[in-house]
Image (cartoon, rainbow, N blue to C red; front, side, top):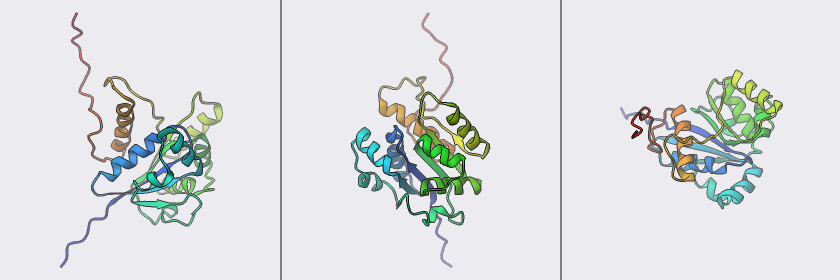
Length: 200
C-alpha cells in the first residue's frame, strides 16, 4: 500500500494598501523557503501602489513569491470557503479600512471574506495593523476583532536585540508572526534573559 502524501500546511497572506508592504514581502519570502508550507496570496489594488512606492516591486514580482495567487475581486476563490483547510491567515500590513471590514463582517472583497472565514472556522487570524495615532474607531475595531478571536499585531520594532538595520527589525517582527503559527525559522535571535553585567 502506498504511503499517503502529507498535505502541506497552508497559510493565507494578504497585503493591503497600508504602509509596511515590506512585512508582506518578507513573510512570503520566508514561507517560500520553508519546506511543507503552501502560501496563498491576495494583493489589494492599493497594495500594488504601496509595493511600488516602498519596496520598488511590481505586483507580478510579489505574486511570484507565493505558491498560489488569488484576485481580490474573486470572492469565489478556494480561500473564501471554510471547507478549504488552512492553518490561518496573516494580513501584512493591514489597513484601517481592511480592519473595519473584518471587524464588521463585510466580506466585500476576498481579503475580508478570507479573514471572515478564518474567524468563523476558529483558525488563527493575525492583523498587522498600520496606523498612528489610533482614533476611537480604530481602537473599537481592534477590540471587536480581538473579541472574535483575531490577533491584532501592530508591527512595532523592538530594540533589545540591538538591530543594526531595517531588515533586522523587519525580520524580528516576522519571526514573531511565524512563531504564532508554530513555523520554524532562524530569522532572529531568541531572548535568553537580561544581561546584568553593566561593566560598572
